[in-house]
Length: 134
Image (cartoon, rainbow, N blue to C red):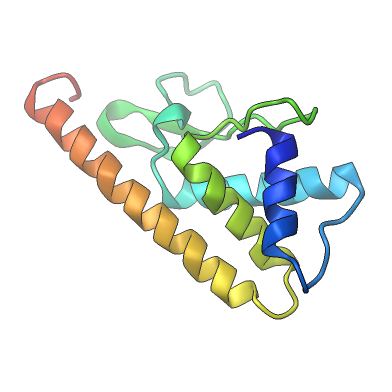
């Protein structure tokens, strides 16, 4: 998902509620907070690194680290998270901005993160059993 599509998705989630700010810096700040929340809760495969010099959020599986995703700048920039997690980013941001449905958006984001995390755990366990990950 691109930055532009993320903004559109958030606007849809917020129909009849508060609006997405027009200020790009405010939107980027919300994305940064959402990325921190996402990286703390889910093991996004795209964010795994062995480079501890990158902006590390936490330890990952098999001697890896979970890095901070790169922030988008232009509408055409792809989000630096696994595609399956883009809806969670939108929901997390909607939970910050919503005046009436914040709790619902947070619950939906958590469902996405838990579902993704369970898939990743199976993937990692398979790789560990094959000896690909220590």
